[in-house]
Structures are given as structure tokens and as C-alpha cells.
Length: 491
Picture 1 (cartoon, helix red, strand yellow):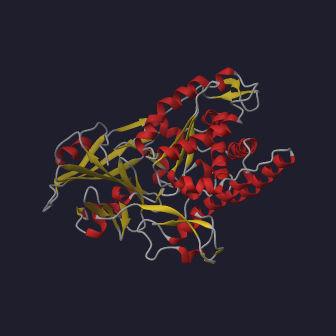
Picture 2: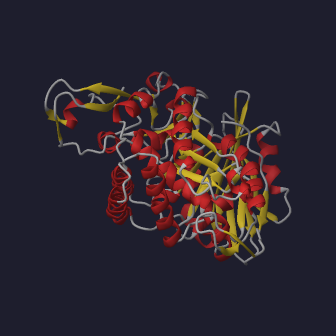
Picture 3: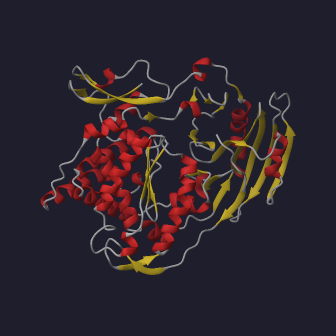
């Protein structure tokens, strides 16, 4: 966990309208940004994405993704004989992020990202090609620049380096740590149904032209639907937005068949090659950097634990841990503070800011960590009033801060949850947790015919469940696996 600066500000991002050429259709249409602006935006925001999520420390895996990405890019509208030079000469970047979230997205101007979580859920190279083709399609069709004309991210409240949409307290928000408001706006941007369908179509086209069996991509979208059903919430990725993953499965197969009819053989699946590439990939959270168990967030490397309110979701980022109430009416962030030296200074850092009204400030009686608590009030530019519950404490040489908040009208309902989470902060002494290691996928070849569940280890590793591993293999627990089949199991 690294230092997170603390600021309170509201940002409204605006754009202008101009008629420019679409690389896909060759016709003119309205865009919010010029192509040069899109390239500049991607270059500016890419370091922020890398700093927050981190890059996978696996040169071979990264080179593999770059190779497949360049193969589908070569078949895109950005690399064809009649493509204009400004598009054709734009450099593309493909990155693998060290995140367990099943996610893929693209920034304007040629920056494309997949996570290790997504790679663990794919079964072959053809599926990877389809996913990367989909993201290249977003860039080629300039969807972010299109959508910026019709959808504003509105005011983004930047709190402790975390950027949250103003709707996170009212239902349907999302958070991205340590990102500037521009990068956050792009990640929050929800593409329209038409834009997503177009990227699916382009993904199939680019993968098929590159020789991949594009229909394989449909199986991954089935996995997305299973992940969504298991979590009870929408998957935080453009891949899972409109249209419904089940509808996309049928549509992708149909489009792939059409390209076969046009003479594209689509012979490459490359399952063995893909499984060899991801053999040993980490799955789930890296428990050394924190995990949730029995109502506690536990951090073995930093040797602390604190409470997680019942039913709250936890998002463990590189710079902070965010806990979100089930109905998204309350949020609590935990982060390290390094630009002040005492808990009192850490709470005052917030209380002294313009627009913050301090309602209560005091030392926490009997705290072995020298904790200070503050309750404050902030009004936004739309007249909403938020109450903040802030606790700072020191463990050894590390200074930490909790920031919990909700609408003022809801604060009394959540203050006890804020208090119990911070009050459960303690030094980690459980040796099992102190010694925990990351879970990795190993590719094995089955030696018998049996139900998938019978190939799983007992007990399972801390950070994954049997259902999650089944989804990663695109099977169900009771599916019978023939002898001689390669499968991914956790160790």
C-alpha cells in the first residue's frame, strides 16, 4: 500500500464538437476530440492506470498478449491499405495489469489493457484474440470520443486519491483509485448498446481475419454472465455492459459463421499454447497484499487487520482499500498517509480544507495506536450534504487513515459500521495468515474420467472457491471431464 494524497475537489470535464472521419466507416461524424487529442489523452492517462493497477511481472505473458494484440490490430481498420496515415501511424500499446478483476478496457489513442483475472478466465488464444479485437474496435470506432458528446461524467468527487462518481451513494457508482479526473471519466464512460455491439462486430471481424475461430469468444461472454450471477452485481468492465452477455454469445457465433461463409477459415484456437502461457498465473487477490476472511480485512505484509461491516463489498487497490455498503449508500476508504507524521495531523489535513466543517474532533480514548477521530460535514455543488467519519492511527512507523462517508441523512444508520471497522484495527498475530501465499493456476492433464469438482484440492486455497475455478475452466462443478483433458486447478 503506497501513499495516497488527500484532496477534496469537484471537476467538470467539458469537450467541444467537431466533424471528423471515422477510421471504420470512412465517413464524417461528430466527435468530442480530434484524433490527435485522443492519442494525447491515452498517453497522458496510461501512466495513471499503470501506477494504480500495476503491471503483471511476467515478461513472457506480456509478450504473448502483445503478439496476439498486434495480430488482430494488423487486421483492423487502423492498418489497412486505404487507412489514412494519421490512423495507420498511431502506435498501439497492449498491457497486462496485475489485477484479479475480470476486466479489459481501452483508452483512446491506442492503449489497451487486460487483467490477469481476465486471462485466468480464458481457455484459448482465440478467445484472447476476440477480447483484444473488441478493445481495438473501441479505439478504431472512436467510441470514447463519440460517447463524450452524449454522456458527461458530471462532477467527480476526488477523495483521498479515490475517484468516485457522484452516484456511488445513490446506487450504481464505481471507483478507481489514484487516478486523475480525466482518466476516471474515461473509465466511468458507459458505452451505448450500439457502441458495444459495434465493438463485438469488429472484434469478430478482426479475429476472423487474423485466422482465429472468433466463435470461441462467445464462451467467454457466457463466463461473464456466470460471474455476474455469482456476485449478484454488474461486472465492472466495458465488456460486461450492454448488451446482455447471453445475447452476445448468440450474436458472436452468428457473426463468426458469416465470416466463414465469406471464406475466412478461422482455424486457429490454440488451446494448448494458451494454457502453457498462463500456467502458474496468480488468481484472486494476492493475499500478501490483503484479503478478507471472517469479517476482517487482513494484510500479512503490513501485519494488521481491521473490520469489514457485514454485507459490504471490498475493493483492494494498490493505493487504498475501499469498502462499499451493499446498497452503495455508504463508503469507507483505508489508506496509508506519508506526508504528515501524527494521527492528529492526519485528521486535521482533512478538517482544515476549505469547505469542510468539523463537527467533532478528539483523541480515541485508550487507543494503543494513538488514534484520533473526526466527524466532518461537506456540501457539494448540487446542494447535497455528506458526513465524514475519519480515524487516523499509527502502527509502528506507518500512519493510516480511515475515511467513511454517506449522505448526512443516512449517516446515523452507518456510523456504527464506521466505528466497528476502525475499532477492530489490530496487529495481525495469526501465523496461518502471516504465512499465507498467493494462489496460482496450474495446468494438469487428467488421468481419469471424473466430475470436475473431484479434481480440485481439499481444502481449497483461501482466496478462491470451487465455483470460481469451475468458471475459470468454463465448465460446471458436476461436468464430467474425460481422461487426457487439460484443466486449470488452484495450488
